Length: 255
Image (cartoon, rainbow, N blue to C red; front, top):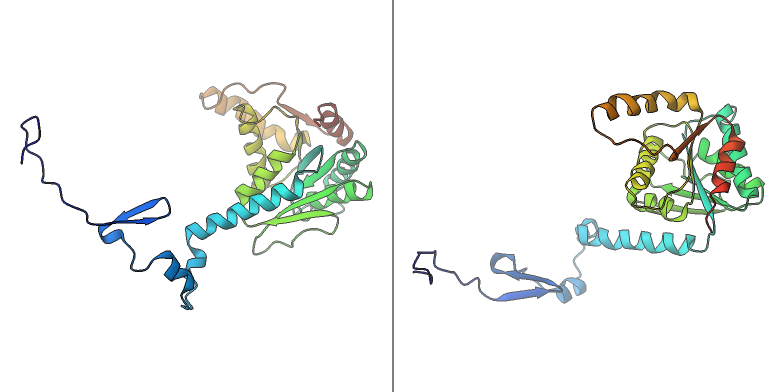
């Protein structure tokens, strides 16, 4: 068989009837053996469908709805990130508690990951100061759950939904010493601000000695090899003073 240009092409095959499943069309071997109504009304005890991606989409959607609904009227807020492993007798714990209290007294809600350590300290400071103490927890096998100093808490299944809530409802970030989770959250914030995906916000790194080695590497090895552009010098403030960290956030407070 020839096309209009005189060149041969393979004979078209009829794919048979078309089956519509919502916006999806299926033909040939892709057509299911039963339709949606039959599946809905089936008495089959098989629950594998609960773990299929389309069902996960609904759970993800529900988490966004729950998060937006709980936090929409929170008002000005700042997030404090930091390690879950910090002991109560640690100077970092006391500093985080002081920062949580300072932000609350300045009229800002304090958001953390809701766990122990630095997160508990910041929540404790905010709660004892009479402020809004928010914990955005994550469902993990070995986590202890939301700490007792949270007066508004949500537990998420998905990290990316939780991260969205941190970014959407924070107008300032304080990052205390922490591990992979803290580093992940810090780099997420820096990336979004540096690429102008979110409005510029104050980012404070508490405990200069803890962070100096990382930033020396970023500003020499990484930058010199052309992997990053020059960091905006006003993007990050490093300090050893909890009160200075609070003032940086409050000076840039957004309604």
